[in-house]
Length: 158
Image 1: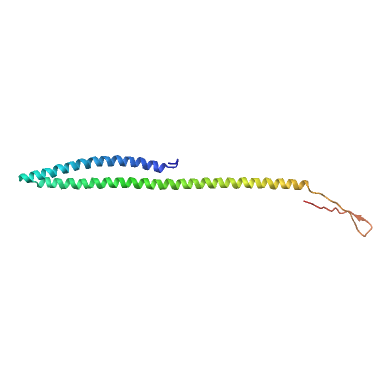
Image 2: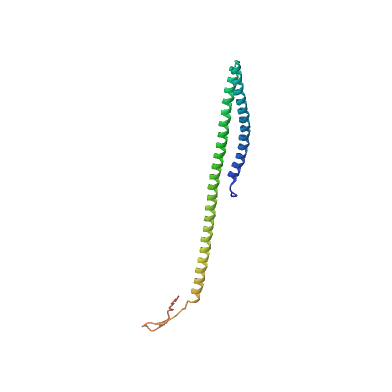
């Protein structure tokens, strides 16, 4: 589990609570099954003796109904805990993927900045080298008139 697995950790704690609840419901269901068995046996014995079993039949039906409800509640509780765990796992995976994507973008941005810095340093170094290699050449030009005018000629060689 990653550091970002907060959702999963909370879901695990919730699932632990759900498991405790399911265990308690299981204890209730077990006692209801025991009561169901006792009532069934009493009904058989009382009917064999010719006694009235209507109240025990009603109680048996009520116990069976409650037992079904407890078992359904157990399954629902487990199902909900499972859904919470699955959703939390998906959220954590999504958060992890986003964090990884951000880290990769940051790394790429730093790489681009480093490349730009290196390129800028190379350009500056090249410009410095070119400045040292510049030669200035001057020529004098004679004009057909009586005076000679000197025009400086600049020739830049790179």
